[in-house]
Image (tube, rainbow, N blue to C red; front, side):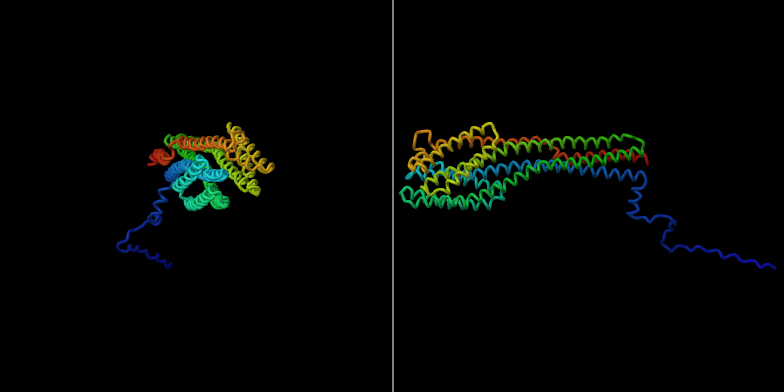
Length: 444
């Protein structure tokens, strides 16, 4: 008899613990990460990803455009201010060497100096002091050096007054006070002025270089945004078989137009600033340096005569300064540079006669007469130098004014994309959202 095998007992399902909800075996655990993953799944999810990317790049482009125009506008503004400060510092330098030239030349007269020359000396020192105060207000970074410079001027002015007082009494010690005053100016004052000039020249160069950096911001931001727009439109065309999404194309066109207009405007502003830098600004620097060197030469001419046969060092200093004048006049490059060169040559010709009379002929009194302008002939150092001084001052005023005017015109010519950049970027982002939402509606 065959024995039958009994079937295994059926498994009785156990009830879930109280308070729990049965779950399907393959169901995903709900949570923030799962919800985000579901939102980016499939074609609708990829559309949302492209929407976020293109919209974000639109806003980034707006920020880049605003930054680019802010960079160029700010650089132009600072270049304008720093150029004005540089001209101001060089005017301080010119007034100091001008006053020293008056003091040394007047010393040759003996007794009371000519009233006009004394007035010019006083006005030059007063102008220098006023410009120091103005420069300290305009550029806080220069205040400490300007304060130190002002202290040296007090010392210089005191020594000059002692030299004048002794010279009126015919005391030889007056010439020593004059030499001491000149040493204070050359060794204490002018090194501070030159340090200020170098610092402000560096600031001007930095700002001129910074003007072109604004173009980089807007071009890089625009190109990256357009690349994202192009990728988005291509992907949409392949997925939806619609080759034109009008709102997104409009957003891309807005970015492209802003990039072109902004890039051209900033490039044009940069080129205009470079032209100003290589023309009027360089002429302003050359004229300032020529005038400073000319006054230095004038002072050394008088000091050579005051030294009475022992002024070789001052004569060498004159020659060095005169050479610098010729070099700087060669850089002026304007139609009037020939006039200045002729006027300076006229003064140099008189100086040569002074040195011939003093050194070769031993006629010190005749040399002094030519140097202080006591004679009525054409051999007059004062008249020859004053002619150069007046003409060069007029040109310097014209070129420095032209620099300020040109930079202001460039700045005023910038379109208002600086404050429109962010709104343009937001508008492009909204156009992307509008265009993409049209395709997303098809999947609902």
